[in-house]
Length: 379
Image (cartoon, rainbow, N blue to C red; front, side, top):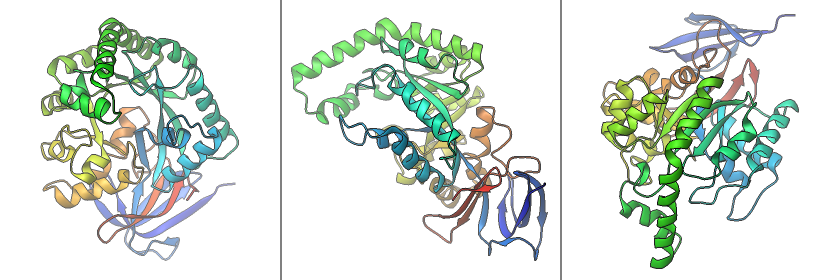
């Protein structure tokens, strides 16, 4: 038996324009889009109808699982809390970041992220989740144990994105020791001697492992059809290396030079939505709004604040000349979906999955009123 419903009197955000009209959903897919008034269906009262947001890089699950240093929360409880906040922020597809390899913050033990992935998949089977959850493995290539951790996911089809990152001093995000010192010495209260040992160890690990691990992981992803992301690229040499590795997503480039080169090379340039909302980077790197102004910003990520993924496109559309709301929202819907090969979602178009968000916004922070995933209301 066919199941259908209509949403009407909505400002429908399409890829290139906003139209007033109705959308018909049948069996979880968009069956028809019509302009003009209609008497049938749920009346939106002029609220926006937006495609469900696609989140490629969020560390938010980790904050629920380890809410304090040394604390581990119940995995299922952490997943459900994360999922609830994600879905009610309008995110219908989320790539949960799981750390591979120990980094400066210590990371997680071997097998711990595998257990988290198993819990996510159990939650999915038990119909506990509102959003669809896929896996993004954040691989610290300078770590001696990254390949060992990665091996836990050798046959997992939920892994759809892998990022290659190196947070060593003098590399990428931390091009200057001033930045690194602030982030790791000052914030941790390390002595000069302890910090010197810390830096020496990280540099040694990076020199020994980064290149070989980057090559190995890129080759595995190419064989398995997993999208590869670079991370914190700072130079043209970094971008050239990313091209060799088949990178499709350039996450958080730290210089305009690297961002422009990545965009020109056909990679989707990703920056943090909190960066847009705040107007600056939390780590002192380039502002996402500056990249948007130059036309080299393609994708936004909520990173550590889920609602920022919906808030940021409205900020950009309000403040950037020549950047329409449909183009700004594409950074959190159609472009991230296409970048990772999810061609069945991210747009309001006939035949695609009925992932929707009802948004009310006069000014300021937008309000999520309702959320549908594959035609089912989830929030």
